[in-house]
Image (cartoon, rainbow, N blue to C red):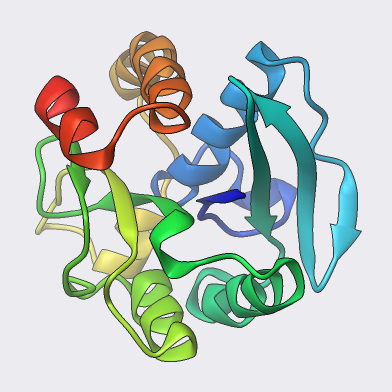
Length: 184
């Protein structure tokens, strides 16, 4: 069983913010696959389904970003999911806006959600799908990541949704090294 986690913050005030890119892409993937992420357990919204003959849980932690790892840990323990079968979708300040990168593991790069996941899983060896949100050094980082998308940024995200959805579908059937070759 695979676990795909979209990182974000709960609540209407955080919709369409840079830090919620994980929620945006996992919601689109679920909708495209006619799946409702509407069950609640362990402070997370989730759906358990089968896509491309692979059992998968789609998860949106309802804790705030900095506590995402606590939610992920509970799902990993309860559903007995291997660390090798986890994919985290997160924003990345250090990448150009709209750039997509897959990583098999790595440091948090200062991302508080990834830091907390690493802390709670006691490893940095989980897969990541990173979406670049750039970094405006003229705005405080917290204000920037919690800021709303511009019209141009929304267009980039809307154009990326199908690519990300296809990538997630391929993740369920391809070896991760092949997936990185195809999408990086």
